[in-house]
Image (cartoon, rainbow, N blue to C red; front, side):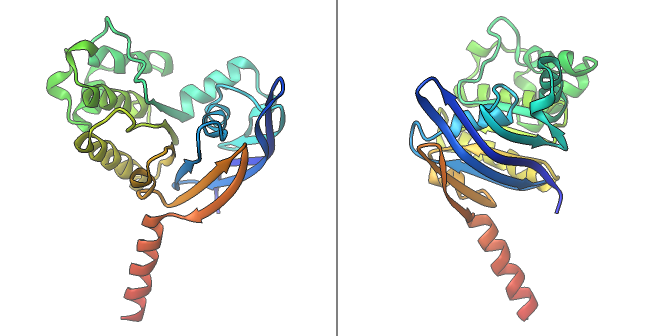
Length: 236
């Protein structure tokens, strides 16, 4: 099985605080993984390490075949730009740029700016008609969908989403989950940090962290349903 992510005995220590403790984990290409656990359990630290925003104190991380520990800052930036799409709870949109321009910023740092491609990304999340609006003219759900469009514009192999529905109502939560499901079905690897069981229910696999340790690693609700459907077809 092709693993896009391999984490081997990783610990992260900030002064006297141990954020991650001897964590090992592999994630196959195309899997939807949900990361759960209480506040302070190490979820965001793990996400930052996988997203090349931080590095482990000890241990090794292999992402898309590359050992992150031997890469320079420029090398890590290149991996983040080329292979990773980031979706944040707080949106991080540039307030004086339109929705379209916020998506095109990601293109600028990746390759060439293509307005039509950016418009298509916005259309994919249902926002083509809002492309010329500033963030302050968009609802919270619309702003989050701009973030999703920005994350997927460069066709990343892995999408990291940190509490992507934390500020959304139920309707927009379902829209974002449906977009992530479509990306997963097309072969993208999805890793979502969440407190919400209803969000984790969309995942193929769920891991739970406590005090920086991996305490649970279980098949997700979606995978269980798929397995039951497969078994039923074979039995029939």
